[in-house]
Length: 131
Image (cartoon, rainbow, N blue to C red; front, side, top):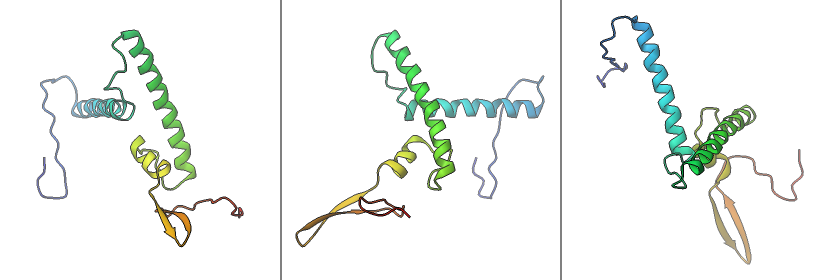
């Protein structure tokens, strides 16, 4: 609910009178975390489009995608420690955009053809000496 001030107000409506307020809030926060995990699986690891119409093929596919998600979390955790461009909470699309795909343009100068990379990251070029 937007109220125009600097606070966001959220409401939980329930008829459960046995739990304390804090228990209800923690329960619904846990639900939100699991729904975020499903969103990541659906969008980043293609869970919403099954590759086959056979259940056993799709089960293998979902298992492999879950293993890929665990591997990605391990990789992003290690990359975030070594590289300041990536954070350990980045989604797959942001990771690919920041580290895998770098925008470039082919340039022509005289009779030479070159590539202009649009990044502030240090780029190692063939023939450069390592510091």
